[in-house]
Image 1 (tube, helix red, strand yellow):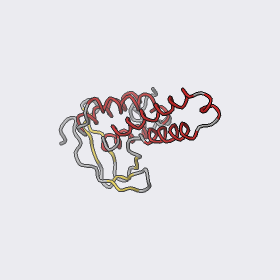
Image 2 (cartoon, helix red, strand yellow; image 1 turned 135 degrees about the vertical axis):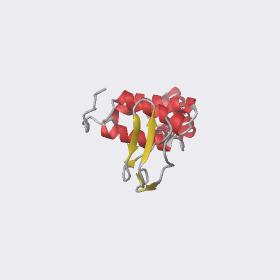
Image 3 (cartoon, one colour; image 1 turned 180 degrees about the horizontal axis):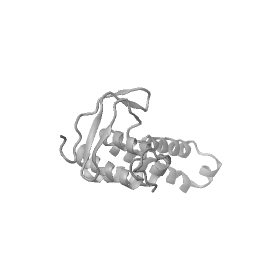
Image 4 (cartoon, helix red, strand yellow; image 1 turned 60 degrees about the vertical axis):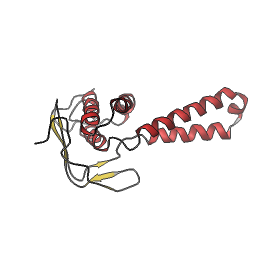
Length: 166
């Protein structure tokens, strides 16, 4: 039996594309609220979807540096784009490489719709802090990210009788 708030194994994954990993063995998280949540082997995840931060940085910086009529005529736009690029890069640097198991579990919960979106995000925060040992301040950034942008990825199709719409 896995301790409450802990994962039972280290992740055993293989990269199947540039962004996606496939589980090679099942993994369980013993959530204090919902009990054992099991990620089956062969489940495919894109891990923490933070590459958007890198893309924001890239395109804001390119736009600011290459200019254009609007950017050239209004210098404040150039500085604003550079500031956004720097903030996105800093956030990316703070988050990349953390919370692999929690992110895989969160992807499963979003895909299956077995919990409401709010419950999925709460499980994610608990899995980050107690399961993966991520610092609370860093877990809070992840949590705010899924609360702000998760609605694009959360399934709208129920796959279990416990499905509840957010």
